[in-house]
Image (cartoon, rainbow, N blue to C red; front, side, top):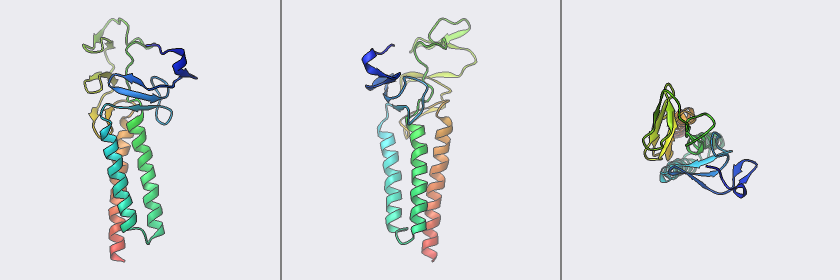
Amino acid sequence: EDLEPETRICGCITQPREIGKSYLLWGPAYGSTFPFHCLIGPDYIGPIATLSSIFVLTLLWEYFVARDYVWAICLGVVSFFILLFIFAKAAFSDPGIVPRINDAGYGTNIQGSVQCPVCRINRPYGVKIQHCYRCDVCIQGLDHHCGWVGKCVGKKTYIWFQLFIGAAVIHFIMLIFIFILVLMF
C-alpha cells in the first residue's frame, strides 16, 4: 500500500498506520527498529503491565531497601534503565513483518512457493515465514506471540526478547542479592 504523500516526511510516516492488527506509530513502514520505529502490537495491555510491574518493584526496592546506600541506588537505577531499553527494543521494533507486496517478491507469484491462506502472499520455500492470527500478519522467523511484549517475537526481535528475559532475571537477582546484603550489614 502506498501512503498519501502528505502522510510521509523523509520517507517516514507522520500518522499512525494499521499493519494487520498492529499500529505503526512512527518510522519507516518496514524494516527499522526502535527508537527509529515504533510498532505497537494488538496486545497493548501486556507491555503496560510489564513496564508497570518492573517500575513498581524497582521503585519499592529503591525506597525501602536501598535508600540509605547511594551505590545500591545507582546500581538499581542503571540496571533498570538497561532493562527498560532492552524491553523497548523487544516490544516496539518490527518483529519481521512481511509486507503484503514488496520488492523482495513475497507478494508476487513465485514458483516453488506456498500461499498464505489469510494474507494471500506467496511465501518462498526455505524461508521460515508463518502467519500470526493474533497480529493478522505474516512474520519472518516467527517464534511465538508474546502477551508480555504485546506482539510477535520474530527474526528481528528474537535476540532482543532473549536479552530482555536475561536482563530481567539479572536485574531481579541483583535486587534480591543487595536486599540480602543490606539485611546482613
